[in-house]
Length: 536
Image (cartoon, rainbow, N blue to C red; front, top):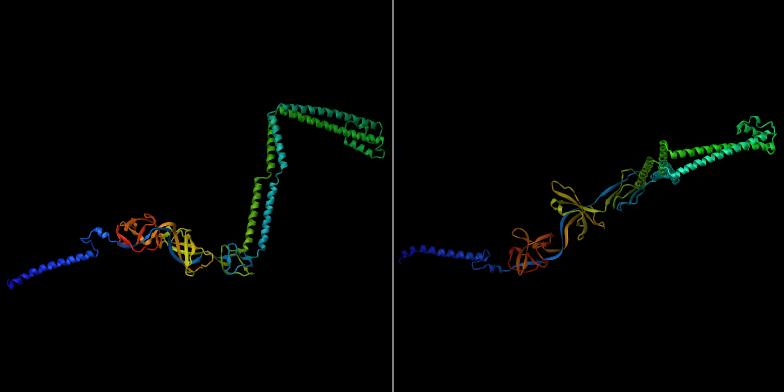
């Protein structure tokens, strides 16, 4: 071949060599790519790749306490403070406190002169006693003897009425006997009158036989008994000088006077017997044949007797008692006002606290409404602003903790005291107040505090480190559990969460190991090697 022929053949051969060189470079690049993990080597199987153990750190799921918290900060302040003012006027007698004094609710702060108020109280108490005495007098008018007599009268009236309406044979016989007895008494009275009249007549004749020139005129004695004029004449004759009361003539005068008195008594006895007979006859007639008027009268007697019983049981009206009760109430109210006035002369602490300032001195005068002492409460609280999204986690009464820079390393127990019912419509925040437990009174208003609110806590919860948590492809909570040196992605149900740990409610058991470092290099089912257990 000539030189010219060789020269024409070189361009084609050169292109072939360049093509082969390009293929070689591509192969080297692919090998390099697969060797860096970008994809499986055509000569490497999937099983061989999974056999490569990825180094991880792991921890065991263990049981223990956990609590969920929220952290805030705010200024320490007293729960409340007040300027205590006088409620009455007076001169200061005592001032048992000074600035810095620690007082309890009810302790005396300032004592005023109370002489006038105490006198008014005694007067009001006397008025109460008088009103009560009037009430006792009213209720004391109920007498057992009056009640018993009234009840007896009612029983008798009811018996009389029942006898008229339903007369018994015994009642009839009793009525007949009463009439017969009354008739006999009339006959006896008539006989007694006749005998007395005869005796008087005999005494007069004995007197007149003496032919006396004084005393009675024997010729004028026409009716018996003697009248008053005749009796007067006889009595005057006894005192005359012509008649000796102890002599025969005097004895005859005395006999006439005595016989005349006996006749008067006999006549009166007959009249009484006849009246009793008339009553007995009327009663028998009413019993045997009562008229409508008789029945009405008997019924009225029962009603009157019953009213008498009611009057004896309650001799006063409801209006009387109401008036007495009103008087007692009025007097008691006045006494209570006087007692309050006395109490107001001692100005007392309305709550536990510390005296911040004293504005009066002993001997000075105070008027109502004038402050005398400024008092700061012992209770310390911190006002915090909470986002609307956290309200469902915070409730009044849940525990909290409080720390201040003045006492590093010391934690004060606290609790959520209140939660504002309304919030700021612009910022959607709500104010809560956390009250601290500070029996040593170390916390002072004006300090700055960090507050940790414990929203939930539990003992014996199944816990894993917080860095062990990952998610499934669907975004659900999961952990990588190590079993047989392989990592298995397992969905779990978390519970309470803290900065260090997460409670696992479901999906994991105590003692199982979970990956805490290296989750990004481990796939589900991949072999792992535990290099260094994470300390919990």
